[in-house]
Length: 216
Image 1 (cartoon, rainbow, N blue to C red):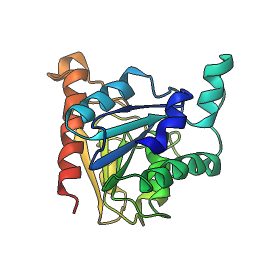
Image 2 (cartoon, helix red, strand yellow; image 1 turned 30 degrees about the vertical axis):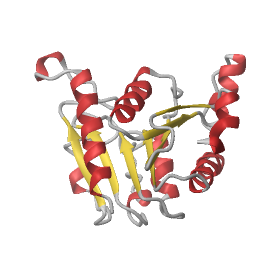
Image 3 (cartoon, rainbow, N blue to C red; image 1 turned 90 degrees about the vertical axis):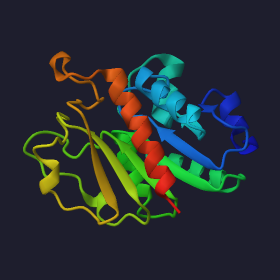
Image 4 (cartoon, rainbow, N blue to C red; image 1 turned 120 degrees about the vertical axis):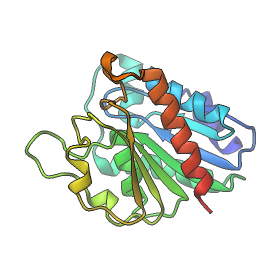
């Protein structure tokens, strides 16, 4: 993982997993919380325990927030994609055999968008933000022409696109949607659901691992 050392030493990311992984997951955060959020940490730890290499990183606006404590809106898409593309190029220069882009919400949308432009082995979206707000058309473009298989893990009650809405929207044949039981946008279920947030996160790790295992 020498190609990531500069960013690791600068505090721009963290790595978990084997020293020389066969599969490297680039894990991008959502709009409002950075790579150190408990959701992100739980996913990274679970995937690393499954044997994958996981590099979690922060987009530039989030790095600045950490420096001065000022909340900023996310960078525009071109800057986010440039950052993610930078890590993809670093990953391609490493010894890893497979590169998986994974992102929470906005990070997943950027991962799917980039996968329409450059070749990676797979994309996993954790709570895809299909709609920005009620009444607006769904943001389907990144899921209509990806160059690789895409897995969308979506909470059944996700306010940005749930079980009642998503199945009616057209997506590419290589996009698979799996549902997280009674989950909200962060996979948290209601107490009456019979499941827990921890169980749903474990289910997300298992589904991600199985998806990666099916890739050639």
